[in-house]
Structure formats: C-alpha cells, structure tokens
Length: 220
Image (cartoon, rainbow, N blue to C red; front, top):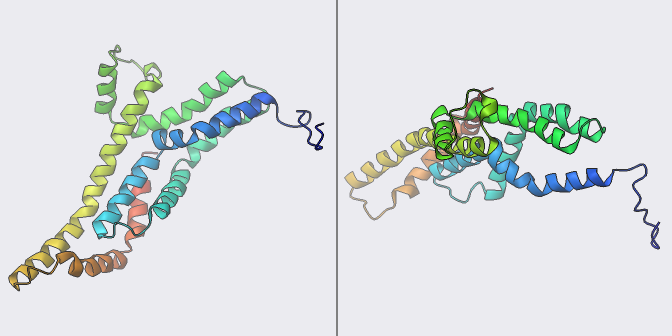
C-alpha cells in the first residue's frame, strides 16, 4: 500500500505478465490493424469513392477511418472470435504460456491472410526470400505471408476502385463534351458534373452498394 492509498500489489488482479502482454498488444495494435486485417482494402476503396465523387474533403478523413475501422471489425469478427477462444482466454486463464498463446492466436489470422492472398504474390515473396517451394501453408513463414497479403490487398482495392470510377468518369466525359460543344470552355466541367455524380450516387444507394461489395469481396 502506497502513502496515497494505492495498492500496487497483484493479489486478486492481473499478474505482471498479463499487464506486460496487454501493453505489448496495445503498442503494436495499430500496426496489426494496418497490415494483417481487412482495414487497408476498405480504407483505400472508401478513398476511391470519395475521389470519384469529386469531393476530396467530404466525408472527412476521420469519418472514413471510422467507417473502415468498424467494417474491419465486422469482417474480422469470426477471426477475432477464434483468436479469443483458442489463444487469449486460455492465456488469461493460465492454461497457455505466452509463446504458445501467440502461436495459437496467429493461426486464425494466417488463415484469413491466406484466403485473401494471390498465389502469384505469395510466390513472388517466396522467391525474393530465396526459400524452397513450400509444400503446405504451414511451411510459409509469416514474414513472407504478410507482405504478400498486403500486395494482394492493394491489387484488389485498386481493381474495385477502378470499377467505382467508371460510371463517374462517364458523367465527367459527357458533361465535358456538352460544355465544349456549347463553347463554354472556361467553365470547369466539375462544377456541372459534381451535382449529377452526387445525385447518381444517392439514387443507386451508393454507400449500400459499396459496403456490400466490399464485405463480399473478402473470401470467407
């Protein structure tokens, strides 16, 4: 008991090892979210939507990041639940050592990454690492899987972004052609096309379609 009345003992509370593990997880959590979850693909696609609409500041970055974070939690829900079941809870109950819990907890995340990673990207990093051809997924080191997963996510996000851009590009081209034919070359086409793009996005329930397509783009 300290002079201020604060009990620093661990009796009845978390052990120093558990506190250390918790602080470690909190320290690396942003990197984990960025590298090994659905967050990069979702955030990039939402950025494409915003730029395709021609509203680079609306929705604000904070809103896009918040949407991406909660969609990530939704997509990764089954994976996080499995990590909690097979690794975190047994570790907190004292049934597993820290290394064993880490290895068990990593397996569901590796499974998720394997499902989203293209074979060509995985083969690229296996070759760059000068490793023998793996016979099974267990033979692929995590240090090879993570960059292959990130590259695959970037490819997929840009493919989805291209499809999102197409209808808005058509509107821009039509508006630009009409303005040129009318001799109104000094009027920026975006001034006229922006309301039509927003109207189109609202009429087709664009956010619904984008979110549905994003969630379905992840292989279960």
